[in-house]
Image (cartoon, rainbow, N blue to C red; front, side, top):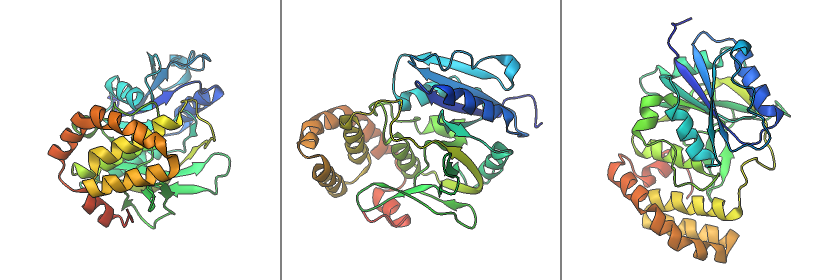
Length: 295
């Protein structure tokens, strides 16, 4: 062991995960790692008692269960980070499995001077041959997964299923955007903001975790919330011409709903937008050019 101090905090937002959250925690406990870690589960208003027995100290690594009343994925992650004792934070979902040494290898990558945050390969729990290695956007700002690189490389978007970074960096950039509604785009907004504020995310391809990809989520995601979050991200980080392009793309898919939501997006996002524009060290043009994103 590196020492008695908790080095990593694995933060997991959970809402009505059923048996999956127990299996996720059991997998964390069973995976062999040299780095000392804790698990912080944020039970975000679950009604199925799925998190009731997670804190049993006899089962292995310590589990701190934080209970909230349905604040949504972004704020749940922030609250979990606030309760974490680790020098490094790893955000994961409540339906995952982990191999031996996965934290050791992420730690080795994070000790590199040019690495500020990392993700890893994320495989389908139901079909392990399907693996993505970080994400980018296509011409409509929709997610596209990268195939496996030969070595660690910078990537624009760090999937919320597994993203690790120093706690000091997380707090320095303001955590996940608390203005995000319920669920959707929060990891994309965080990745974009991280890069614009001068940090760099990498993928560590020698680590592969497994994730249950579901067509429905325990976090109820109304269409309005996903559209709102998309517009908020674009409004806060894109130059005017790119923001209007994002609005046009949203209108193509969602029609009048966009016009309905826009006034609220502008009114409620102004403070976050001002902070991001004031503190950014890079521009959205540089982001799109650096990663070859055609938007």
